[in-house]
Amino acid sequence: MQRQIKIVGDNMEKQHEINMALKISARTKKPEDIQQCWPLMTLYERFEHIVLVVLSVIISLVVMVALLQLLVNIYSILMAGVLNPMDYKIFQVIFGMIMTLLIAMEFKHSIIKVLERQSHIVQVKSIILLALLALARKFIIINLETTEPFKIIALAIAVLVLGAVYWLLSQQERTEKHLHSS
Image (cartoon, rainbow, N blue to C red; front, side, top):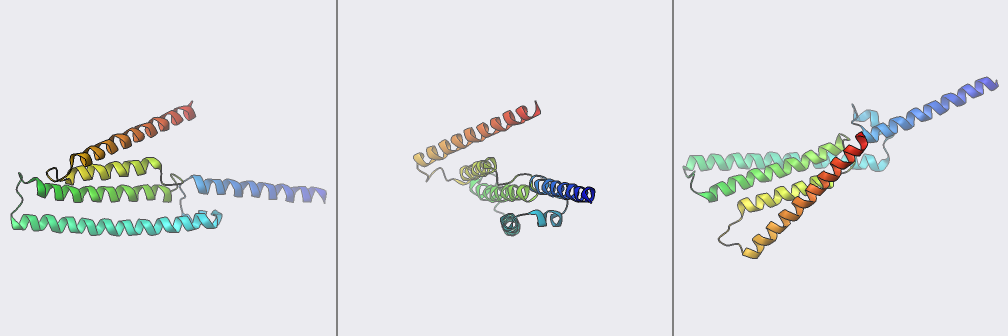
């Protein structure tokens, strides 16, 4: 009888260990199937997952609409015959739209990384990269003739600061990977 109780107790302890390992795995690794991890998630983790899925769908729709608008604009420029290689304003518009698409896709990529459990939250490094892309877009579409010099200087300083922060985060990431591999 005592042996049966010990076996049942050992089995319950092993089952608890397995459940804890699965719960940790569900939070740290990419699940093969979300249904596998769903019961192990807390209510808030489920809420986060649903929000991320909805955001991903919304961003996908925005990207599709922006891509369609870009294609329509390029088509109308080509049909109107106003695509002059020397006219930088047309290229500003086109490349500004392309950069907007790239920014949206990078944002969606950072959300997908969280959904696939490659990271727990949207990483600061991704946000810095998005800000750098937005500033690069701003420099592409900015009208140098009408923009005040101080605004250009402020944007340039912002790029330098964000670039330095991005570099520091990359260095920290490399150092941490090096320490973990040693």
